[in-house]
Amino acid sequence: MEVREVMTTEVVVARPETPLPELVELMVTRNVTGLPVVDSERRVVGVVTEADLLARQAYTDEEPPRRLLALVAELLRGSTDQWAEKASGLTAGEIMTTPARTLAGWRSLRSAATVMLRHGVKRLPIVDRDGRLVGIVSRRDLLRLFHRSDDELADEVRRLLADPLHCPERHGVTLVDVDGGVVRLEGWTSTDEDAHFIERTVHAVPGVVDVRMGTKSRRSAGAA
Image (cartoon, rainbow, N blue to C red; front, side, top):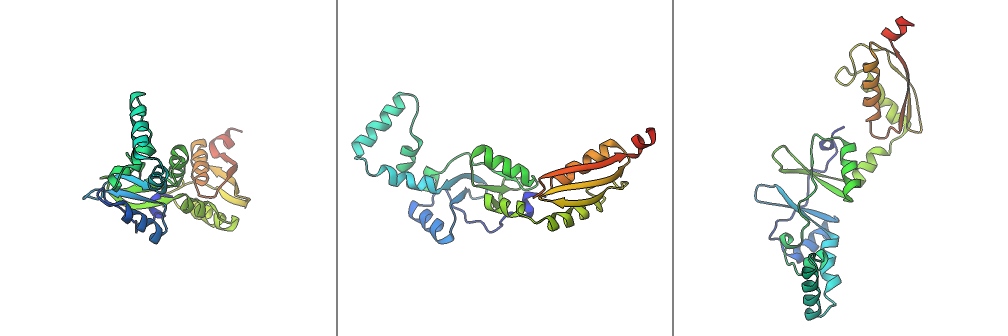
């Protein structure tokens, strides 16, 4: 399944010039924890999160001279405190995280989950082939898809096995059962490669934990 099949298309966005009060208003009223920041052509140039906005609150308790001295010290050491820098920003463009992690709409759900875990992000802006924003996918969206009953998984596996666009045209693989997300298959395929292809295809179904193949190719069966 591709991410564009499950993404949210009505995305709350900000522009680089959007001021902080408006960013807070958008997040609170629209109940979101992050906003893609887009340019005039709707290309994603960054992301603003709750943490970016909280940085200002975290650093406003310090007296301005102390804050300035801390920034100077960091610069002299060859690094800067990103949160202290964000605290001085007044617009989305000044506090956003960039470059933004995005994903093409044709990528798989597993790809989305991998990117989220690898980079520690809670949501991914989804872009078209020109890099323009078309939707967004969150961790919760993926969890909903992976939380499926055995009966739901069985129905989808049967559809895949009967669909020549997703499985080899000639095969005799059938579903035995699904138990706790573990799919058991049996039957025959024309080649060992076809068997491996079917196994990978079924394993890619959201919610499938494992695939147990009790199949053999007609070629190997004949040799036996």
